[in-house]
Image (tube, rainbow, N blue to C red; front, top):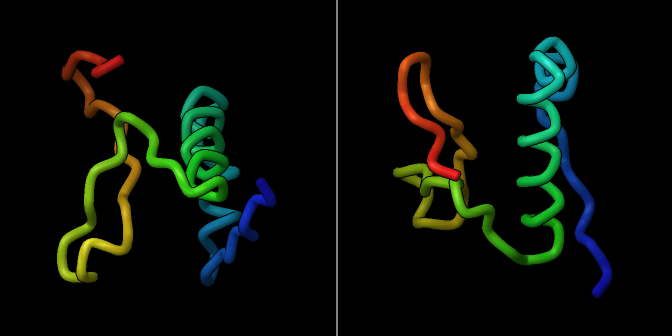
Length: 67
């Protein structure tokens, strides 16, 4: 299966590079899944886009990790 390209918008790639390494790894894994047409287990639908976009969100401070 050929992965689809990632299309970075605005400063999103630079913004992601400013996050801690663990966050970058997790987002990178989710992006790879999306490139292959899969969905990361922790990805949540981003409302208002017809279900076609996903927001990959990890736990917030104090929340348990879903994995």
